[in-house]
Length: 84
Image (cartoon, rainbow, N blue to C red; front, side, top):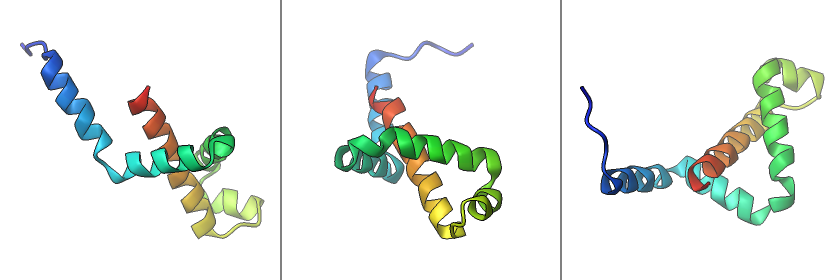
């Protein structure tokens, strides 16, 4: 049976989540472009649903552009989830 974690253990775990490139990327984007946060999240979710190739073809974008948007959206969502 697993033992309950202590507040110190949980604090250490949360700190470790903040020490990632994904978290830093999401924090940077959110700080620099607060007006675009919801837009990039929505677009990344659409890319997830359609797939990189499908979304790129439908919106006349390169795969690299789609991947960067997808990764940025994931980073912002990760940042928001951890920082909340």
